[in-house]
Image (cartoon, rainbow, N blue to C red; front, side, top):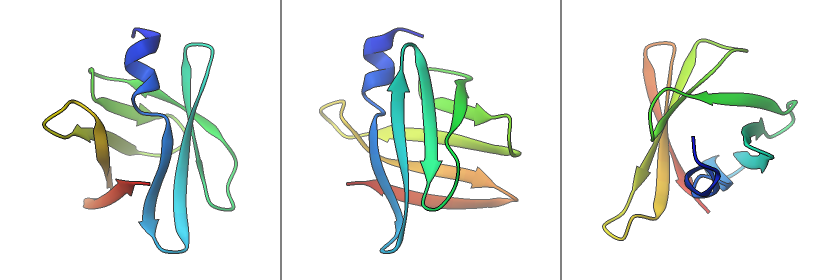
Length: 86
């Protein structure tokens, strides 16, 4: 995936007022790090959907009308969790 596309996803996403996930880009690899947890790589399935190898979960980034990422949905354990970009 093109680095400029990955850069759109970088930022902090709030799951709750006290729990967030920070997405960073190192080289051409996107990483996620939740509050109080270790950083781990995530891998693209499509232009907006990623998966992780450390857990059975999928991350789907959503954009607004201008093409900016404004939130993501974490699909995990049969549930969907919306996290707003800070």
